[in-house]
Amino acid sequence: MTISTSSAYIFECSCGERFNNAFAASHCKKCRNYSVWGYTKYVINTETEAVVHGELPTDEEYIAAEAEAIARWEEEAREFEEWKAEQDAEHARQLLEEAAKKEAAAKSAQEDEEDRLFELQDKMLGLM
Ligand SMILES: [Zn+2]
Image (cartoon, rainbow, N blue to C red; front, side, top):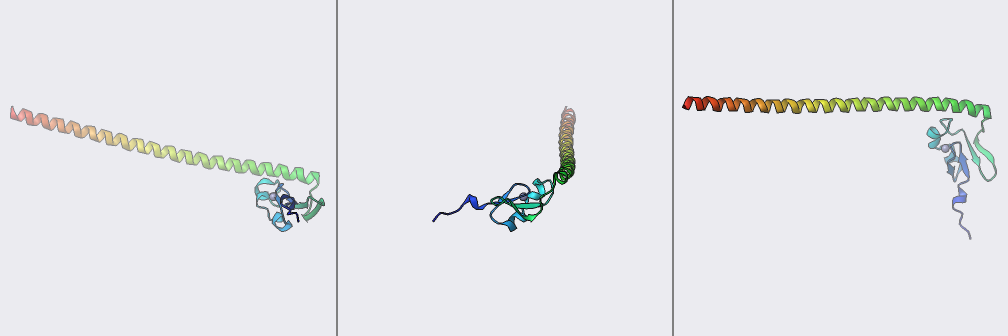
C-alpha cells in the first residue's frame, strides 16, 4: 500500500494555494489578500485541469481585476503609511512631553538648590 501525501493536494485556488479538497480551496483565506480578485475566483483540479469551483477569468477580466487590485493594494499601503505616520507623530509627541517634564524637574531641582544656598548664606551672614 502506498500512502499518498503531497500529491493529494491537487486543488489549486486563484491565489495558487494547494488544498486536498475543493471545498477548502473555495474558501481559501489567502485569496482575499493575495489574489487579484480579493476572493476565491476559481479552484482547479490540477490532475484533470477541470475547474471545480467558480470560473476561469478571461484575459481581459484578469487584466481589469489586476488593475483594480493594484489600486486597492496601493490604497491599503497608503492607509498603512498614514497610520504609521500618526503612530510616529504620537510617539514623538510623547518623547517631547517626557523631555519637557525632565527639563522642568531639573530646573525645579536647580531652583531648590539655589534657595538652599541663599538660605545657607543668610544663616551664615546672620551668624557673622
Ligand atoms: Zn487562495
